[in-house]
Length: 326
Image (cartoon, rainbow, N blue to C red; front, side):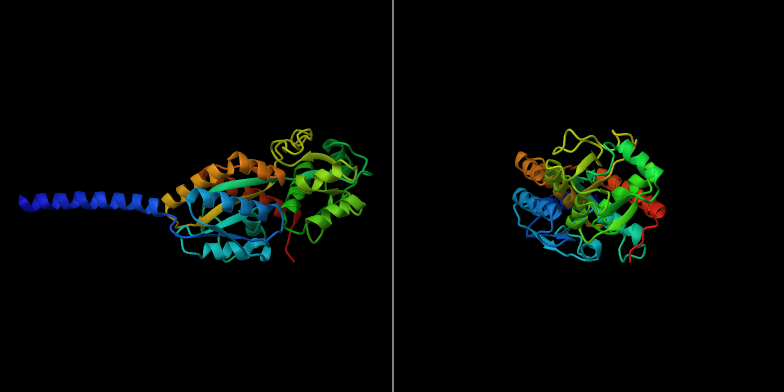
């Protein structure tokens, strides 16, 4: 009887110790700086700016430094792979971009799998594209643009920051859903593509709302609609593409946080809580609005569903447009 009682006590102690161990683990994290990998160069634009804003805010909330580690190259694949291979301890996280869900459709032999090798933490920000035309193009709304493009297959041209870019996919999705059949002209980056439509070298472009805004007021660009599901805060009078006559259309650039797949759930929960709290502070919202992007956080499950939808849509666009990386 005595031995049986001791075994019961030992089992209870072990159970309590195991349970409290998880709590201690969650409370202890983070005990050292966190490295946030990002697949673009420092100072490259709104994505890098939002990464640094997020790092500062999350660091304040967690009481540890969050260091942005820029790993540009291969369309973001270098940073993605480094994060996938990192220890699953919460000290290396990935500030993923829209390209992270585009690359699998373009490069089926990637050395990592975005769904298998990562655990979603939270979506962080979205960026609307502004469907814009050169002022000389004789259209004033989306319906008239679609009609003109259909009447002259592959006569109208659209520019993008490069093959496989988020803006390229936004335009090809528009082609696919509207049967517009505009011809793609790739450029080296966002400034070059926007400048090309301003000069009249191409007819149509999908610059970010931030890039389009200063050009609209001076008559250098005619913006017909925004690509997001809701109107963009910086262009509240401009309708969405869906509102303008293309039901079901929605496309944005985005950034969100992923961690290696085996990262403990309590660490994911702590990171998620810090991101949601930080991004939704008034000062963070104001800072993001100034650079033309919108905070949009949620649960890990929401972000997982978002990525699955993006990947399915991207696969359809690649097949429709026959997109291939050189």
